[in-house]
Structures are given as C-alpha cells and as structure tokens.
Image 1 (cartoon, one colour):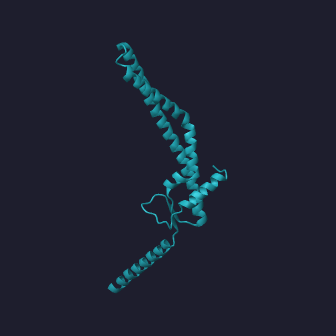
Image 2: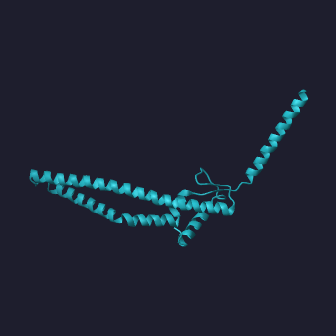
Image 3: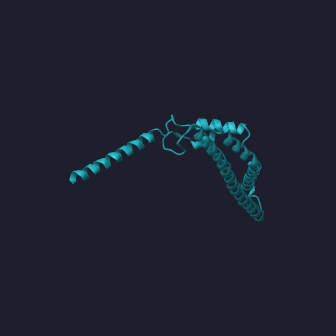
Length: 177
C-alpha cells in the first residue's frame, strides 16, 4: 500500500512538473513590448500640436497678466521713489491701489494657472487616448501578448516607442484627429 500511495505522489509531482514546464515554455514564447509614455507626451506630433493649441488659447490672458505685472512694478517703483514726498493721504491711497491691484493680479494668475493646468490635462489625456488606440492596433497587427507603458527598465530590443510615434504622426497627417 505504501508503494501505491508513493507512486501516486510521484505521478502527481511529475504531472505538475510537466504542466509547469509547459507553462514556462508558453511564457517564453510570449511577445512583449514596452512604450515610453513620457516620450509620447514630449515628442509626438499630437502632443506638440496640443501644446501650440494651448499657447494660442492662453496667449491673450498671459499677455494681460504680464501687463498687470509690469503695472504693479511701475506703481511699486513710483511709490518707493516718490512716497517720501507724497502727502500721507496720497501715499496711503497709492498703497491701497497697489495692494488691490496685487490682490487682483494674484487671483487672476492663480485662475490662469488652474485653467491652463486643466486644459493641459485634457489635451494630454486626448493624446494618450489616441496613443493607446495606436498601441492597441500595433499589438493586434504584430501579435503582441503584452505591451507595458510603465517600467523600471526597458530593453531597447522591446521598446516600440519610435514605432508608436511614427504611427501617431501618420494618423495626424492623415487627418484622423
């Protein structure tokens, strides 16, 4: 009886080992690639186009803020230069005006940054969505089993970022935005 139980254990162990080796053999045949998302967001035509779009969209407000900053500086310089010769009431009024303009400037500057960041996030999300569609197409066409976007290290042998950048450029030039 002991030998019968022992042989069953050996057979189970052998079957388990065979299954593990089969799994390892299949895993070694898996096609894996990697994409550098940061490069996509820096170098792709779509990302550069989004950046230009944002610059155009926010140029007027940025110019207004620069004008306000210049006005603040000139008011502050004038107060520093002429403050000692002004009457107390004039100096107090100039300080109130300067303080009010500074408060307004800081509020507008904060709103500008918030709006710009929100729009930038929207544009970059759209770029990543397009990139993910291209990556999926590449995976299906070239029969990849796994494509990762975040990794500590990626061998240049499996990095397909250049391929994704070219495919994104082709879709941008083809008019499918």
